[in-house]
Image (cartoon, rainbow, N blue to C red):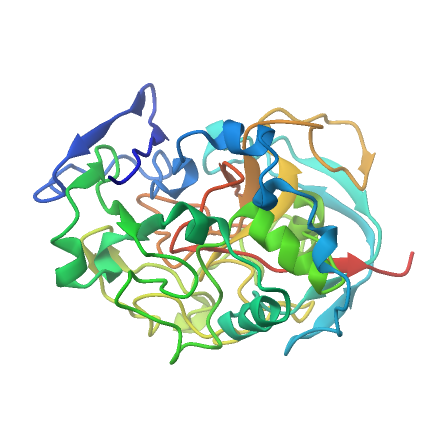
Length: 358
């Protein structure tokens, strides 16, 4: 029997955690105000998330054990991001409850960063070399956006989350089968790997002689040297009518017009890089960071902040192909969201960083 999942979706004044039976006919709800809601992927929680960590399962163990025998970067490339001060966050938050503000001065040291999100091909190299098994594979299921499921798979599912019925728990969904058990990655080796938990991402990065970026490093890299801009390229979403990221166009969650050319994830490097040479810093797939989640931040100047020492959720950045301003206006550099470390979903991936010159 499929384990129950809990999702807590924040509205203007309501926090609801409810699992209902029946995914059909649940899309008639009116969309909430812009920036007030979420695509629902921020609170996809597994039963016993804390219990798994306390029991010291393999997936919660330090990832450094996979670093032995690493043989360079598998089919990837890093660029050096020269360190320096920058204004992190914003005083004009799109979603205030997410803790996007206040705008604060932060200094980060130099570091190397993957130019792209880690791909299926890269993750396959890691699994081939180590025999690693992801948490979604161990649990036996993962969350998939219903719009990318085949009719055959969707018709077998009888559970959906009330506040976000487009998210369905799917048996057999994992990084190898990102769109459900009847899918595979044969034809999408250059798409971002999905359905990876925070521990899975950390294990890969350690094997590749790297680590996950801090939220400050990630945001500094996203901004590409620009100050007080919404996106990695500026303030206009589609300058001169050109798409700069893989996002949702149309009526979420019912219709994606795919004006940017993609209904689901896109191959990495499909859109222009920012000034630092980094691709897909917003859109395509959410990206894990190293930091624990918190919504209150000091205004004092900091150097290489790493977030709070503990917590229940980890910070993710960048938004995904499911983001639309009416539901998830989180494809901005200052935007942020969170998931429990053992979460996995069909729009959640990562990229790695490594220590750089100071």
